Amino acid sequence: MLKTKTLKMKAFQGANVFMSRNLVPPEVFDALHDAVKDNGAQLHLCCDPSRNGPDDYHIIASSKHEKFDDLKSKGCKLLGPRCVLSCAKGGRPLPKQGFTCCLAMDGVKVLASGFDTEEKVKIEELVAEMGGVLHTKTSLDLNFVIVKNVLARKYKV
Image (cartoon, rainbow, N blue to C red):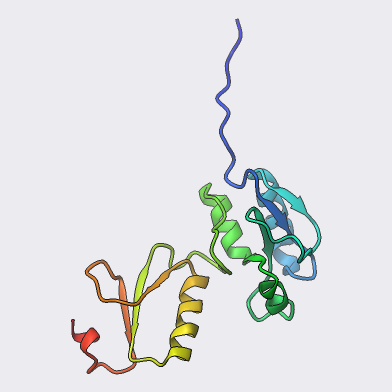
């Protein structure tokens, strides 16, 4: 009698993950290596900025790393070590948006009011890096409102 196995797709199946010892802290390198392999991704132990397709991901320690801006300017999808480990632990696919350092604000909707354009861009980057989304209009499903002035109309709403 033949037993049939149900094939379960692994969370990172189809992803090409690039991980260089120069871009990842040594204390998490082995854990990241195992997490990526165990979740079905093709692991490349190098940094290759020319690989920036829809299924290519580069792990980098932080947005402050000296190589960060270069990789970002070449269109590479960048992930922080915490994000990769969280996705692996939860059996989730890797995020598709820009740099995601962690999932601390995953699914959180934020509105920023009273800030100039440059400040809003920075707030949006920070929120997105943690998996959240910055909204431009007031709605009932917002989780947080960040205001520069508590007398702002959006804050009162």
